[in-house]
Length: 477
Image (cartoon, rainbow, N blue to C red):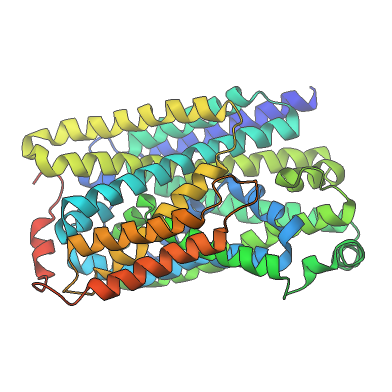
């Protein structure tokens, strides 16, 4: 068979295996609560596996290596720290939210009861927009990866991976996603390590690569390289802010067995996440050493095509499928749970069966436009940045409300909008054309919203946090 035929076999078989495992793991008698939260089911090891797999996606094969080609190693480290930062933050605020809402499901439940309708609408809008853009970005990255490696049509790849993921996500809910995540975790780590090690060996070793980069672009190895430091700071703010509104991660907060497991799992998950981003990003430096940076956005694949044998390219394709499915199922489950929980608040006990059906239909409905967008190969980076800006303006007010009793809904909305106005003013709306500053935009949105929230707090009636636990119940109760 031709390489393209082998690539298609690897693509279909990898996707089919994970789909079959996910479907087989599902329970027909599963309650809606278990379908949405898998509450209290995860020990530390299992939680680490699903957190790493959920945090990593096909993006790790594109963005870190591209970042290394122009912003250098210090920016890659910033990328890795940005990817770890939300896990560290969840280890702190996750137990707090669980204590307030022992039967909780989503961040939006807390926002609704803590701040009221205005901040709830903003939060729900930001979360939905961010996660859907993330979903389309993952399928787009997967489709591009297969096209670059084997010329596979974009629509075919997006459809195969999208349909296979929906097959077990809609049927098995969060428990199926968690099980496949744990398996994907043990596939992606050794595969990435093997491929990167092979690439460096064929390239002549780390010393050879370092010498070549030093000769061509020494600033990329300079820890004080200012553009790299600035971009790294942007990534920390943007990734931290956006992931705090990732419903898939909030589902895993409630799925942990207890608060101790939650803290340990989110803390330990940071180590493999950090290493994976840095290791993948290092291939951008290999691309610089080889002079393979004509298209920085696909630097890793340019290196792979030059250095890896056919088996290595097929393994890279299998890795891409694994990474993509591990994040897509998390996003689909997260978006579907938002629909079910928010409707469940007003639907009443008699609607439980319909809510599960609606959650499944939502999963199916979301994948259709995501596949359609991915089949066009359109970059959604700009939309991603807009979503990150929205979250940067809202993150402090939302989570400050977990601790500040005299900080009300109006203050939260005002501080978010003020931060968003400042961030929007400095946002490079002509990107990639010059003008504006991502660092000032994201940093300004975060800082101004925080200062505004602090200035507006301390007034009015103190909120009784004990109320939330009594108001948030299992779906359908």
